[in-house]
Image (cartoon, rainbow, N blue to C red):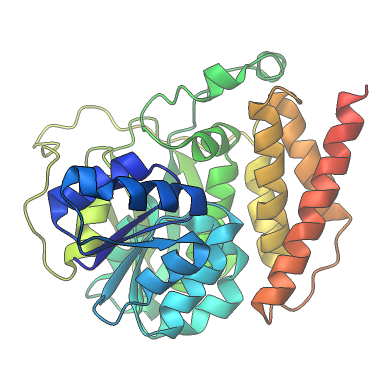
Length: 358
């Protein structure tokens, strides 16, 4: 292992560096990098090289000794890291879906070179189901969704939910933003666009179903009418391990689901209660910079909800208003994406400010 990177938790990354005996670490937060550098000797890590800031993280990802980079940077800020890693010929185990969605048209040539291994459980499932298959034989794919923390609430009840409730996911343990996105089904909107870029399928060939048990992680249906599915316990260690060891399968931490799985249920998503899912199809079909703008607006809206500035049910109208007021441009450079993401963030913030003045 060449090194480890983190955001700002320098104490934790020093512990992991000692455990895994890596020669380098990088911290996105420059102050955290300074703290790590000052304190590394106390942990017997005098030899450890500490790389500061975004440039340090990118330098570590492009290290000549690295043959695989695990990309798990959330939000738009992961875009440059994603592209720099790929441009330097690194194979990427990709968990940072916002970066792929934002820069999908720039990333697609690298997908065609088989440089990206999906880590999202749903896309890992599709990837596994496609091994040994002719991609031209695929009729459509089905992404499964747990339904999030509020899958059984009415529209009125949804307007009353709190950030604390939204962060209590019934199945998965995840970060704050992705947990809220799961509750709105915007996470699934991102995954629809992600599937389009990863597997080259048109949007009418990408379906979503609610699967409360989170055992079936996704399915591929072929033109002969047969369907392959990947089943596993809801534990992210499995798709991470699969990507890290591909093409081998090595013993993993989670226990098998065993021969008896109980009842598996599937139901269509309720787009009246959870309309954010539809925005993924809308922005995806618009193409160009539209997915980037939608993702950037969501980052601001989710932050505002978690800060108590807006209601849970305000998230969709904000995203819809930003997308409706936007004319997509060609996604032909990182600079263009950054410009449009700033515009989307500004528009979302203006809408939030309007709501808070009500």
